[in-house]
Amino acid sequence: MLSRYSLAALALLASAAGAQAATLVVRVTDIEVGRGQVFVGLCDRDLVQERCPIGRFERARSATMNFRFDGLTPGRWAVAAYQDINDNGRLDMQPILFWELPAEPYGFSNDVGRYGVPTFSGAAFDLPPAGATVDVRLARLPLDDEAAVQDAIRRQGQ
Image (cartoon, rainbow, N blue to C red; front, side, top):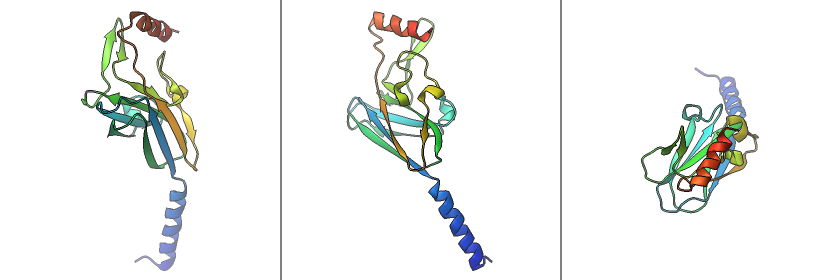
């Protein structure tokens, strides 16, 4: 049976652990309203899905949406987001020459990945214990514009 000192120690530990939890608000802009759903993922080591342990979908109900994530460990994080226009639960890709490029709107924290391969170090930011708000702008690659596609491919090689 726990003594009152043990209970007090547990309460102190619980409050200390709670003090280290931070809140992150991800403000996603340039959403195509009423088309599918928006996914926001929080990544802690890499931008591959397995390294983005926290994330969720919400219906695309307005041009700007806020996603609130509570109870996060302060530290280094990155955000990856996309709009699943066709509601198939994934970011569709379109093969162009030797690459596969996103066919749906996407974005990352720090606006990386627009004209090259996104990296965790480029998208990463420090989440302080006090919390933060991060902006992510969604955009489509102009896959029907041959010059823009060639420019994006050229920039990937840089």
